[in-house]
Image 1 (cartoon, one colour):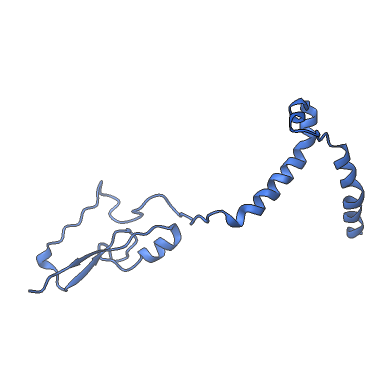
Image 2: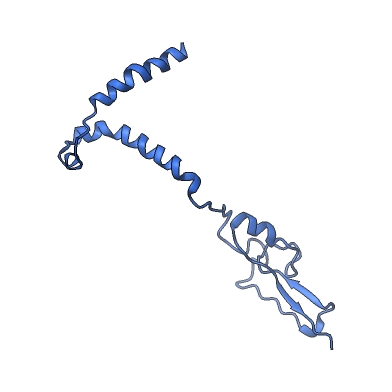
Length: 135
């Protein structure tokens, strides 16, 4: 039953529909079409536009999904501006990494949360690395 209906649409109704369309023989003929003729062409033009889009879609650049537009989602939100001061003399190790993506659970120290943030948003943020010179 279903295949018979599809067969009837493809073999009979679609060719009859296409024969009734007011397709001009020249490009200039499109300018002479009436509003009702343009309205009869709309379904066909919509389908052609959709097929064209689906054809070129694999070649379009892929966009990363950006979850949110705020950078700082939860750290010191009660303050108008977040500022952390650390004296270089107080560094305990030779290298210390500080978070710049605002996603670290150990903020201001980096816990590599920027890796997931970069994957989700397409960003390229990384930590601020302070190196202590050993003399």
